[in-house]
Length: 529
Image 1 (cartoon, one colour):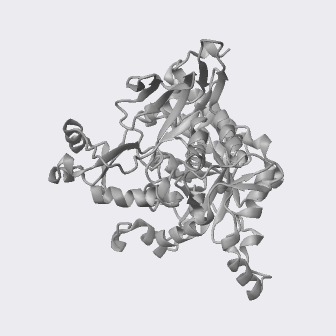
Image 2 (cartoon, rainbow, N blue to C red):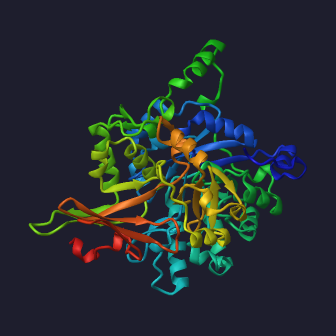
Image 3 (cartoon, rainbow, N blue to C red):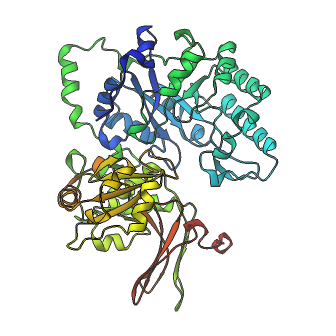
């Protein structure tokens, strides 16, 4: 249940009382939950959503045919705006003008580019930000890339403007000098492109927003959420609206689409549209072929997952296709040598991770054994209790980065003082990367005997909903070597201080070692050529 808010001191309500329209134009809705649920959430929060589809090579929507399938199969609810978010820099050539114009609006960000040495860079992924020149020169390069995007890409607004890498954000004002702000604002104004005020990244700063307002630049509000929980009533964005004195005249609005008008529709037609909503498919749960046809469903009816039933060859092929995006290459060893697997990246996008996991849990045990990427889930109920060791239990109480859940309910860490570690029959560590946590935070689930029995029944012994399945992030495992069917696997520990572990299968069982290299550094890159 969401915490109540004080209506007497709520920024959203104050703005609505002044007839200031509040719209979050940058929402990523977990489509396995259904767009109708997004509408309910929008109504609960009291503002409208613009649902953004990630469009670009390697994303769910990767070409014109898939855009058409998207609208044919899913994007039919008139209560939401629909947006194309151009991904990477290739999206402009990938999607036609006709395809772009099917959406209510189009936006991109300046966070993906090739750096001064041609290296693909995502500013929000710190290991990809290699500053091997003076930092101000690196900022000049970012500025040049940003201006090129504004001047050349056909967008309505720029998302997460002025966001930098984590290390650079510490010196945000040093990098965003008045001269650079002037360049940015002029380019936006000259190209009639609006500036997003992003609630999660908390950019731009008030200083930059005021400079843009003075120049006549329009604004949008946006979240760019990873999960549903980040949709927190646009706190930063609304604070900037008030602090910078923005009015309705400062805000950007999309042009109305014919499909949002009920003119020409009689009541019977409207009733037919509403009655058919339940039949609309969710493209995240389907494989769409090159012609835009639905080939195979991932989830059962009502977005339920049945474990271990086995998956079709089409889904096994799709699973491998996703893996191939992150696999540099694999090599089959000669006699007496092991097979080796070289990885480009240690992390999967949220969409790819979710889709792989949903497919993986439905595989048979034999199908799972053949996969290069696999998952370590919460343990099933067992006859013997495995309480946490006392030293670890004491550490969790003090560790502010540790989030404690007892029988599925979040509690304060100090609640452990009112229990003994032997009160719990089993525990599981997980990261919070895909559940709205910081990268250095982690989650500990502890179950009492009664709680574990209930969890096991809901999670393992019957079909489970996708949102329940994704509630606890499983450990992700990369295969790096296999010799005579004895795999060596790297698994990321939930505790960021531990990092990657090696699980090595031997004749005597499985050996676990800490301080392991990451999947992408396990083998030297020079070995891949």
